[in-house]
Image (cartoon, rainbow, N blue to C red; front, top):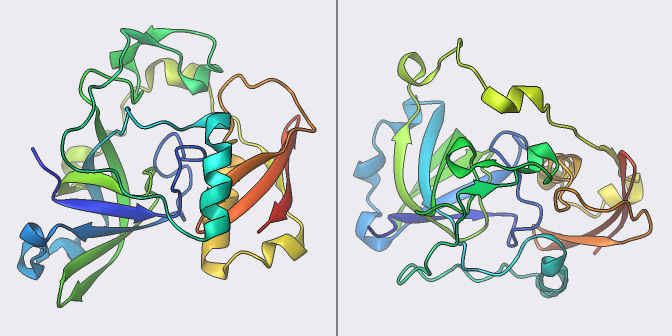
Amino acid sequence: MKPIAHIHTDLPQKFGIPRNSFLAPHLQGRIVFEPEYALNSAVAGIDSFSHLWLLWRFENGEPGGGAADVAGARAAAAAGERAAAPAAASPKPARWSPTVRPPRLGGAERVGVFATRSPFRPNPIGLTCVKLDHVELTDAGPIIHVLGADLRDGTPIYDIKPYIPFADCHPDACGGWIEDAPWHELDVDFPEQLEAEVPAGKLAGLTEVLRQDPRRAGSKHEPTRVYHLAYAGLDVAFTVDGDVLHVVCVS
């Protein structure tokens, strides 16, 4: 298989990417097709749907995530540039384990990989439901604008399918072990003078990302440690003390 498109988001590093779609429903994404598939006729009728399924590839061989991304995030933010999109050809073999430690369980308990959405799987294929914002038709082909995507900037997209409510929605579905581990969000202390440094259209998505606690699951309590998140060309510095995340600098 080869990508039909790549998605461009405000998160160039793994650090900060929501652990599931719609945990940050205001995150913006643009799906840009590869030349071979960049045909306006190929998306005719898609704007009649409210949501889409995206099938995409995890970049498991790429370094990143957690504190290891701090230097790269700061450099990218300081340069005002996005990280380069991963090459579409010759993906590295996926690293996987039959059991994993889900962040929702605090990174302490193990469950089977196929009972999770861990990226470290035998085949690095991701499945995400996104909200369709609008479709932009250009001379170079269509651009699909979406909201709520939990994808890194430059992620390869293998397929796009419409979300069909009567077939895809199961109100009586059981959430398994996840229902016994409700997700915990942080309170975000974001001073007004620092909020003013963020473009208005990007602020809601950034706040949602911070609320999910970008740190690695099970991180030690280090209230004076400064973390850095690369977001929309910005370097967002913050600390976490208990259940409160304090934004200390935006540059």
